[in-house]
Image (cartoon, rainbow, N blue to C red):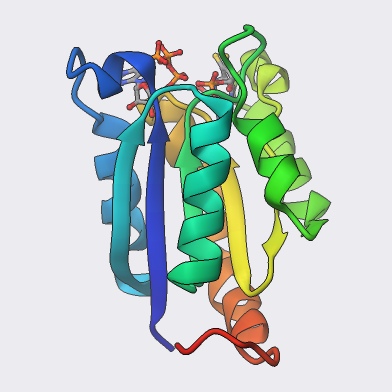
Length: 162
Ligand SMILES: Nc1ncnc2c1ncn2[C@@H]1O[C@H](COP(=O)(O)OP(=O)(O)OP(=O)(O)O)[C@@H](O)[C@H]1O
Ligand SMILES: Nc1nc2c(c(=O)[nH]1)N[C@H]1C(S)=C(S)[C@@H](COP(=O)(O)O)O[C@H]1N2
């Protein structure tokens, strides 16, 4: 089954063009076999803007999957989990737990990620950390479960013309 995917990079430096979005590129490569990258944006760590994009990509664009990278840490500018929580109908805690558990085996810094995963209407939203290493190591944990999970979601009744 082929899925529609959005990649949302949350980065003040990236949004200012001060840094290439290597992590967004890595995500695109890792999910290429899952479907089509239908949306991609690099935006600042601005909570209202993140909420707006997540709602748009889910409710208007009916994406099957949105992967965010960045802004899941401890600083005041790290607000991706807060924005994500505001748009979710319900969380899928097992995915975030699995990512942190597997990551802890690699780095104690993994406990610093407040990443969330959950569903809005028929869209699965998964937060990933910002570093390329963090993205790779967390995405490889959830990737095997995505085809089944996304297929189940796609089977739900939806007013999304997709
Ligand atoms: N180690 C890194 N190497 C390359 N790019 C990185 C690295 N860490 C973060 N990034 C980029 O910054 C984005 C945001 O990640 P994160 O929030 O961890 O970094 P940040 O330094 O707080 O970002 P910013 O200050 O730009 O908001 C990532 O999606 C990625 O594009
Ligand atoms: N697997 C894995 N998880 C990881 C990391 C990593 O390098 N590998 N980085 C950690 C670090 S250093 C931080 S600060 C948190 C939050 O990262 P973010 O602020 O870039 O979202 O993710 C953590 N999770």
